[in-house]
Length: 156
Image (cartoon, rainbow, N blue to C red; front, side):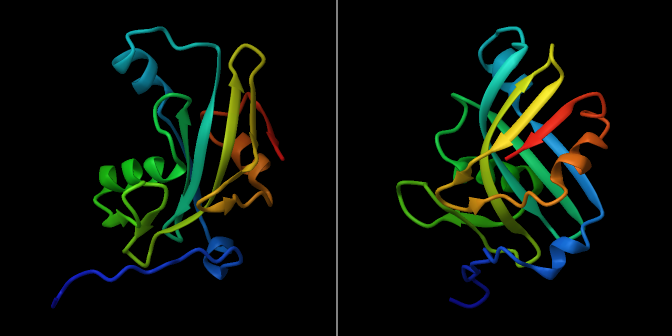
């Protein structure tokens, strides 16, 4: 089919583009989930899954609270849809989301836990679909963001 996108698997862990990333942004879907969808106040302690994704210039850590999405791939799909980045699931189980745009790369994923009272964020583990997230220098870079400048960030 002419003009159709062909899946490109971009999952290399050591990529020269990641060294040139200029900005880091945190996207926390907790407010949307708790306040808008569940009609609840935002809890001080929250946890869930996250993905680390980049276009080579910008890097995003997308935090999804428990209960919002089953798989890391669902977080990737939501992120891509919100930005008009074309992709699709590899299977009907929706466990792996492929991004067709070669500028975008899912670097990895894991699990997160935040405590707003203690001002602490922890990122750890890995994604079955996308592997371990890139940890090098991440805690320091997260602590330098506006959202987390008063937080202690632990990366394991």
